[in-house]
Image (cartoon, rainbow, N blue to C red; front, top):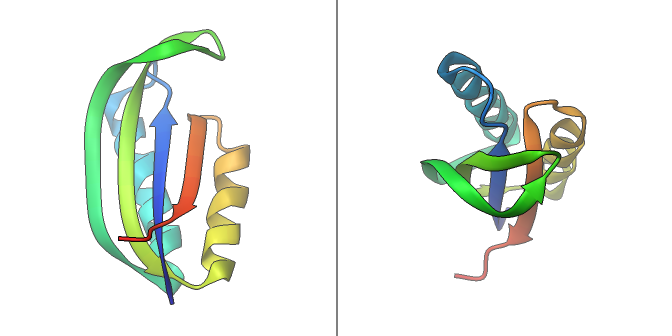
Length: 94
């Protein structure tokens, strides 16, 4: 298994329950074939520039170990999720 880090931004205009549901959905995808080592919901922050007409977003950072197939599935789901406005998955070298 390889180590990865994913940072994603959730739309600020959805309710807290929907934010929690989205976070749990992505945790479930990672846990299905991997192991989460660190999970941090950093809360609502101001974006450096406007993304999809939003100036704020809820930032979530997750470090995990998984097979590449899990990362592919996670990326596929994040692309089609309406609540995610931006995401980035990287290899974690630390």
